[in-house]
Image 1 (cartoon, rainbow, N blue to C red):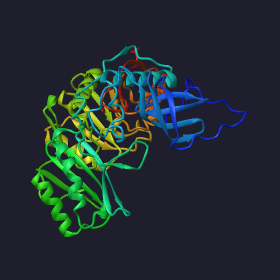
Image 2 (cartoon, helix red, strand yellow):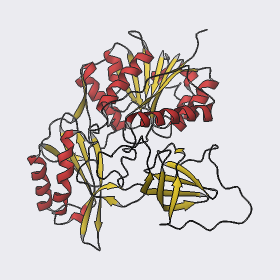
Image 3 (cartoon, rainbow, N blue to C red):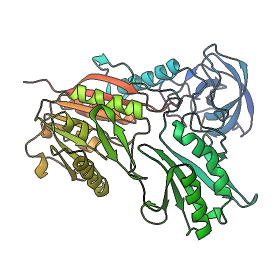
Image 4 (cartoon, rainbow, N blue to C red):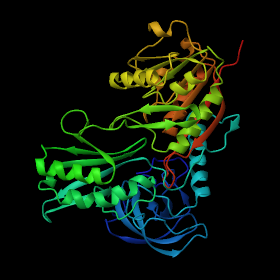
Length: 452
């Protein structure tokens, strides 16, 4: 359900309570604007309807999917009057699949929605606007996704394995015949995979599957019970025929089946190859990732030999390019396995000016041995919950410049407010269109503390 906003009209308390809108009820709706999650907003009898697949200015027949208080979740079942901005979806599954919710909107309108979301969150929660808005970082509208998870469920009644993507706001699985947002090497894999999984002797053992593309293609099969030898061989043959690695995961970590070519991805502008394993976090959009790293380095602008701190560093996606350009980099991550892989990546790329450490990023950092000399700049790329505890320590780390990469504008705004309390000014901000055809907003912000 969309987050409530003071700008939305909700039914006031008191008076007689209207009967609930039943699931399945159809209602003619006039769409006024878009919510942050890309759904159309309409108002009927004091209730607010959030409507999948609708654009501002449209008249639609919406079907109620559920109701919470005076908010109705719905889907546009029939278009009565369409917006001139509407376009035909590139994927036949777009109106059911929960992955791409904005294929009916133009790329320009999608970017405007994301820009407005970022601006509203910064203003509403932090009372801030940047001194300069950066141009959105964009890449291909389709064929960009190099990693994807397919849902799998055994239907006991039908005695059939369902394979596909989750429907919007539902556990229903939408079977797919194509997925145009996947990078080209993964598209034939995704189309052929359901057939081979349904041929397994014990398809009930499959939990989910993931597809990866980088320096090689890979298929990860998560199984909840041991696979029969024949099923394992069938999966191996499927992958061999398509030039993909097979990885299996039971109760432990993912493991490759047989010898495997190194699996990783390239950062071409810095002549870097980062190795990774299924299960590791990696940005799904290679083009936007390259542009994001380049912008972060330009905003940090470290001089050769200056100390830069990379928090939530993962495999070294930012740390290694920073080191390649001459900074002395300290990367910090909370997961020891990721720290080890980052160290390996640094060694394999011939970089000795970067050092990785494991630390609990919810605890004070200033007393850590690697933090004693302070830092000229800090980069942080936290998960959706943000990095409030780290941000509270920013002044003690001595950084004049902070670049914050965010996958959640609400927590970015919260943390920006804390940086403001410490004397940092929001110099620049902009969106990163990491997930075209969706309402997901990624952003980058530059904070600076004036020199005294």
